Amino acid sequence: MYNDYLCFCDIGRVRRFRLAICRWLICAAAICLPFVAVSAEPALIRFSHVTSETSPKGIGAKRFKELVDQRLAGKVRVEIYPGARRYDDDRAILALLLDELEMAAPSLSKFRPVSRRLQVFDIPFLFQDLAHLRRFQEGPSGRELLTSMEGRGLRGLAYWDNGPRVIATKRPLELPGDLKGSVFRIEPSDVTAAQYRLLDVVPIALPFSRVRDAAITGLVNGQENSWSNIASKRLHNYLPNLIELDHTYLSYMVVIRASFWNELAEDVRAELEEILAEVTAEVNRLALEKNKAARAAIAASGSVKITEPGPEQKSAWKAVLAPVREQFADVVGRELIEEAARIAAQSN
Ligand code: SIN
Image 1 (spheres, protein in one colour):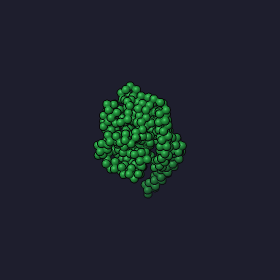
Image 2: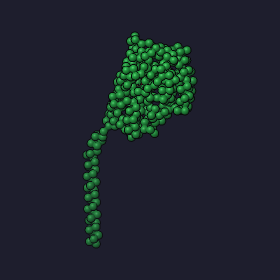
Image 3: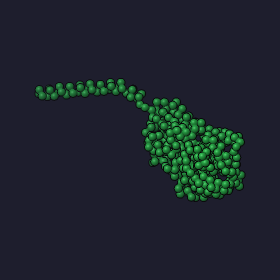
Image 4: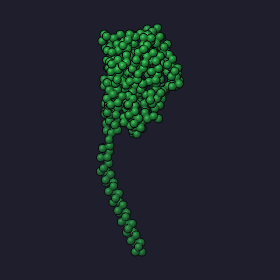
């Protein structure tokens, strides 16, 4: 009996003790939780790119940061590393894979180490014009390519335009044979390398940050790029013969580290997607404007010759470069090439 009484007393004491602890914990949580929530660091997006801050991509990156600051304050923060200040594109892709970077927007020709299929965009004369390229990128194949590198750690969020590539050389240039024996800087794409080999040109893959020096020192005597990139690096001063073949388009994929993306809250991801859709429309409009202005400024500089090939001249280039499509059909995927051709036919 006495033992039972003692037992009840103990149980009572234990219960009171537990209750006190619970009350204390609840109070402590009530005091600390707001501070925990306030002091949680916003997710940091480190965004690297290689062009200037006034290029379409540079302005796009800054606009992306502005909108994130406005709409996701306290949840996400963006730091931009422009002009290859921290990473060239090949290193940026590596940094994304090594968790040292969250975002980049490399040219589609730079993804060769991660995806061979993206080289479909480098096949000469596959896309007839910018509208055709846009239809492909916004269609099922283009959307599938955005998510095709997830297994390798990258998720594509958007395509950004720059513009048609223009070939610029030191030598007079009109027909494909004029390039024989030249040395060209190219982006690191097997398809682009094959294109130049068909023209009897030696291709050297170099980062964008090295193109100007390579042209000045004579390491290369030719390269291809958009008007805005040629103007920003003043490449026309060293490579003054330019031809507008519209054989390929310089276009970017905005990519984010997949592991980072998957850890973000769903509402944050949705807001980032919305922001990117707005910025993409702005970048694409700017790209048209900037390339037009850059072409006009280069033409007005007086010391260049710009060739706009007529139909016969263009056919000669197409004939020489035609084998690239079959040579890379199995590498990039025949279905992608067929889809591009089908969409071209639809638009006519
Ligand atoms: C870029 O526009 O991002 C660079 C393209 C190049 O490497 O030529």
